[in-house]
Amino acid sequence: MPLSKPTILVVEDETAIRQMLRFALEHAGMRVIEAAHVKMARRYLQETALPDLILLDWMLPSISGIDFAKELKRHRHTQNIPIILLTAKALEDDKVTGLEAGADDYMVKPFSPRELLARINAVLRRGPIKQPDGTIHVGELLVNVDAQRASFAGQEIKLGPLEYRLLAFFVTHQDRAYTRDDLLSLVWGVSAYLDQRTVDVHIRRLRKVLKPYGLDGMVQTIHGLGYRFSVKQDKPL
Ligand code: CA
Image (cartoon, rainbow, N blue to C red; front, side, top):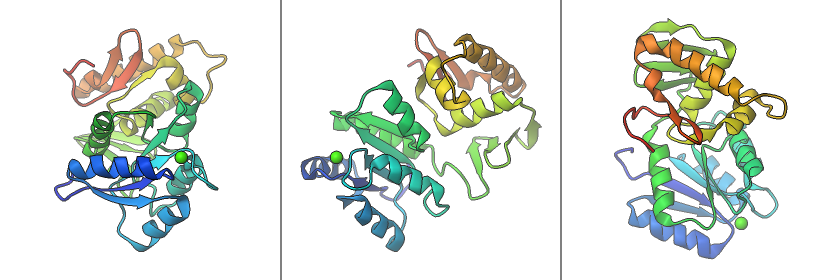
């Protein structure tokens, strides 16, 4: 968490939900900026200091939250602001669509303010996710998403292309569990004709590469569900 009050931009067209969010977030010591639609949010982002996080409703008038998320991720100025998507859609496909659009996390309505705060804090704890040079820092592990390289304590980690993609996905989506199907869609980009065991094979390879650096424990198996990447190595879900 940043030392100063984190600023959360809430983009939501329903007044009642916006007010509920303002109440819950301010109560938790956050600063809230409200935008009822994308135009208002754009104006704020152009004219004011960038927020620490954006809560973005999926269903908005004229421009959807998904399209706005894509727009934000396209622009250098705004691409590093974490986004949590608020959605009434709970289907697996929608979750994937949201994450593919660049959202860091998603909340399915109706949700409890308490759960939302936990997610917001989890995203904020990741700190400045991507440095301007494209590097993501996880302690001494550096993953450069632009150059597709990874290193630990200055030493280059040699990864196969799929292991690299898995690692890059994990460091940008920490502390969440993903099923094998999620990973096939989000990392491989296909799911129809690949066996779920493909995921296990590459997870094993990734752990093997990370093991000499003592990082293999970050790639965690969630029994009956899938996998999760976390620096908290000992905390079961
Ligand atoms: Ca809405």
